[in-house]
Image (cartoon, rainbow, N blue to C red):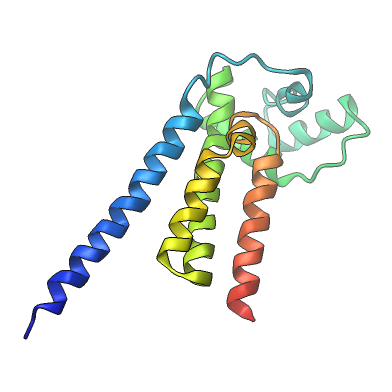
Length: 162
């Protein structure tokens, strides 16, 4: 009589393990070789003023050093505080983007799961996990991965609202 409950529990455990496995793979691919990549010129725009004593000084310095800079301040706010939490070395500067990339993998999984079911969510998360462009954006201290995450979350919440 109670035989369906263990099957459901086992299925839930397997699904959770699959998501955890994809997240471990995503983390491994994004953390692999993270500190060995040099900082490029466009990445220096992101890190040029992180040593400012206050966040407002960071934004002011960006406007002075790069007056044509048109990206919004959210990423730079997150990066400023992440640099305080971790460090100003190459690894510390890129940890925020790796975390945002992992959140993006989870957001794609949840959007796919909500839209088409567990298998679709797992497949979508695996595709994002293995995407070379997504891995690159997750390792580069630029706001592109935050834009990707916010776009996925916007689409997900729009689907939920409609």
